Length: 343
Image (cartoon, rainbow, N blue to C red; front, side):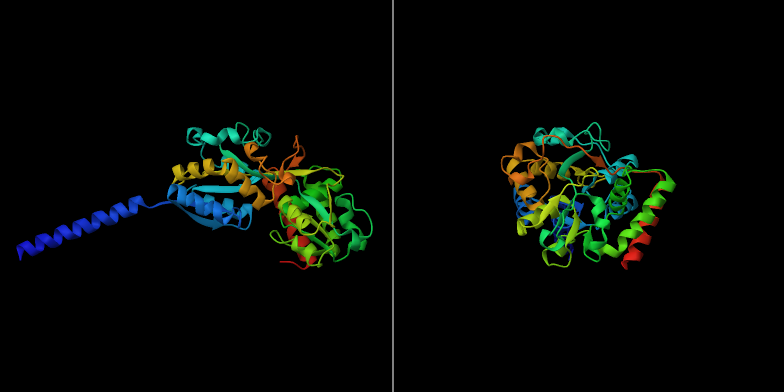
């Protein structure tokens, strides 16, 4: 009996040890971003190369991401990809950690054109992952006249035929540009005036959708659309007869970037993934999939020529504003969507 008990205890200890080793050996990376940001083969090959499993978690808006990251106190997620202005907020709230560049040997592959912006002036926290210039795309056969800027979206001839993306700051911003104002206006009265002008756009709006606004052009539901760069790339490839317009009122520009949360459980895995996507062939596969301007200089000779960025990248970025100003932007957006019949 004693021998049997001793044997049982040994077996249980070995099982516990094996279980413990198994848990220690399991490596993972919790990636938090939008849907479809990477080709499947890029994700799969990273796991084959490193043994690190990627847990892909998604959000619908930058604001949702920031809220969840704050609730997690900078933990839970290992790597986050979001837009410039929201990264600025995350860094200021202590939710991002400085990168250990020794763990990113391919750091030098980054195009310096996309570093040093206001949200990370010393390039300490972020690796850029795509840049863009939102544009208007329209069907000349249906519109029948030349569109040159944001102001044309208000033309009564476009009633019930305009599709737009769903970023409340961007849409407020292009409205302000038609008024000769900054996209980051802080004056409450000016923002309210932009809200009133935005309401006048409502009769022309056919669709508000952040992920699929471009499809409305392809299926004929809309004849004009205001789109992110990736969508512009996609629709022009699908239908070359469509025409893209960089608005006369001035360009809005944006940079997506990856950062590691302050309490990321697997920061080494996050650094490994950042280095991996900076490899020229991997980076090229990512940007051909994304349709954004390539931010990896070393990959420019491998990507679609339309994704090679211009030699200068100038325009106005959306930046964080005061709480009072942001509340008014939100109010404008809610009233605008209600006027469009959208929730």
